[in-house]
Image 1 (tube, rainbow, N blue to C red):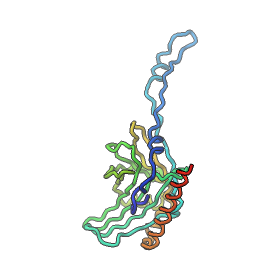
Image 2: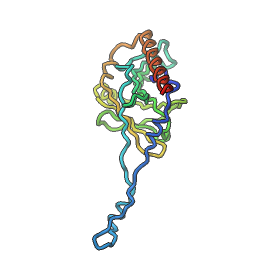
Image 3: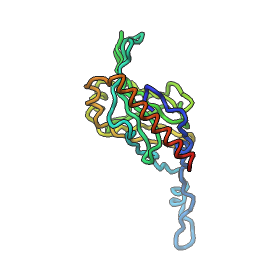
Image 4: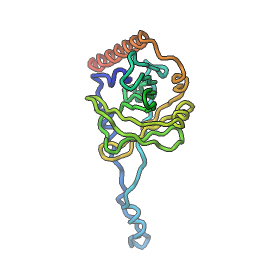
Length: 226
């Protein structure tokens, strides 16, 4: 599910969309005092909208990608060469969920951005927010959707890059179809080492992708057999 392939065709996203649409709870009972008279203050508090906080979805690195992978394009883009450091993430049950890439784009105006491949079923106009450890959130927006997922992008400054290199956890905040906040939380340990290192050999990358494709094929066959 890395940025060199996009979301792998055939991966079902129904279970994830169902998880993203967890309904908000509400308080509806009114408190009463011992004399049987309604306590107006307690009743108003009970009937007030409740903000339960975001639904947190912890993710972990894909088993087939033990480290962050740095990739550089073979041919210069119109604005200059592009290198990106990426990693795929899965749920605790092993379901592919998203991919994260930090792009270093050279050209007339150098810039860096975090590009995230997210599942379907999100409110795109609300955009996204990313936060490294306890830093302030950085806003971003969705750019394009594919049949199995949507890309979102966040421009990052040198301070954010430094935080990513030394950080431990990246939180990606979005809203689901009913407007509930959802937070994907993933480790970023090792990203700094990959950013400063050499890009992966194209043959090694092709072998990594082949192994992932075979693994996903096997999972699909096992699922059909069950």
